[in-house]
Length: 279
Image (tube, rainbow, N blue to C red; front, side, top):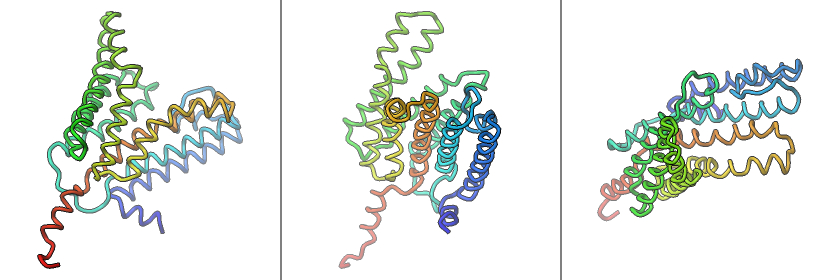
């Protein structure tokens, strides 16, 4: 009964449940085939992980990736909560569009090995749109926090674009300068951290959305120590990293879903206005 209620709760719940159910059924079926036959090539295609065919423990890791991807698909495809959309300004609508576009661009990374082109430039432009639009929409956070996030995010994206451009022009000194601006990814991580903090103060984003953002920042630092300290199997590194990276598109999609709801401050204001004068 819970799955039925979940399907009704979200705008595309039934469609998402159908797609995810079919995907998980295929993953389990070809997982069994891989364990029996020792050939996991089809299973690797399903979870979009390249590598040498294997069996046994590797198949179990691939099944873990498949289950995580099924969860991520549900989070992304189910859409916003069913019902009327809250009143939204132009910046909010643009941010929702930018978030969904970034989910699509991020998803292309899974198929990067099969694509004849690179999507780095498009991803940079998509991330720049997020930086600017989050600055405009997160009006519940302090101006200092928003400005710091804007500067950090802009530097990160500008450095990434500059690195690509100067590499193509073979301008090594400028390329190195662009790498320095990014601080090995720390400027982008700072933007992400400040944005998630601002989301918690804003009120329009749920706990699940905020925690998926936190997980997307923290878990990548834990994959290598976990693999080498507890699992002691290098073949587990890529599958587990694949699981961890799923939290970013989930955060993007859930951030867009949550924005469809009414602004909590406006709801509180309307309740005060409609409250009986002596009530």
